[in-house]
Length: 343
Image (cartoon, rainbow, N blue to C red; front, side, top):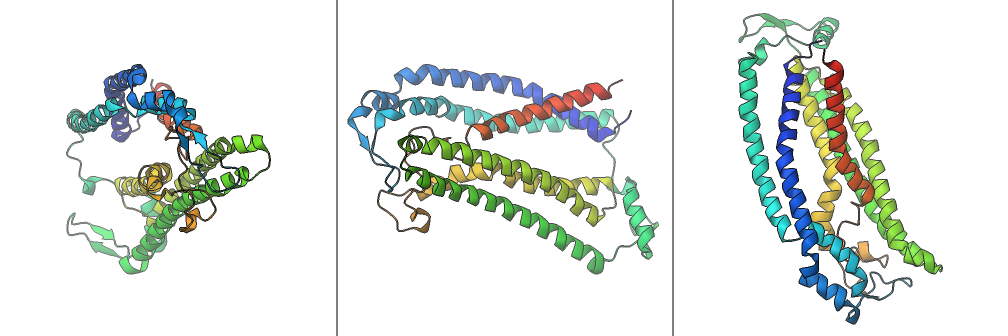
């Protein structure tokens, strides 16, 4: 069974990518182990764990259930943070940036070699045959034909203002609406965390008060994960429908348009929570008793005093598992398809 050069290039890229991941993965594991070894010698961990009982920290909110806490209660969380936030991670980040650049350049060379070997390096878009769906719509609509100045052949012409412009407007309006919807889901999860934690802390049950942070973190991350899954399913179908409406002439034009829509939608869907944690969350921190801003008016500080572990908000365990196993699932699926389709 022949799938074409596009599928072959994809598996060539996947093989090269997997090969290049091996050394950088080993290097990352070494950095992680060095961070674990360095825990006993870190001065910040020593201050928190050994002398933290001398420091009383402010409550994370202004409601009845919020209590003062000692700094040494965050000892374990501080150690866990050190595993992924130490001096070695700076070197790892620099190496990763260089690795990504080198990988892209290596892939460009490898792609050109394969294109030369497969005799597809000189394929021009004008030589690509039109899609059957494109021809079917032309036959159905009965568009007039004109001489193409490039090919010199008589080809049907699709009206730009009456056909293309309205479709493009509808398509990209739908994409913009999807991006806004994803950001709205993220804001909804943020406000959910603020409101639910205050409600749990105001509960008369001491056991519920003690688990308020854990319950809020787990439920909010699960809701965020569910939103990502649901929006992905919706976005995939919407992108296909919108691209079909555009009715591109060639398969390459169709694939490029579909890829752009999927990239815009899925990028915002998958990484909006990470951007919030990295660039927004820390800038809205409040001080005890400060209710001057609307987002803090519930009595909950917009970013509670974190007890060391900085990845426990929206990006909690379910989201971490999803982000770790999603590439693994895609790689295994591609490998299985390759085995099933091979003779």
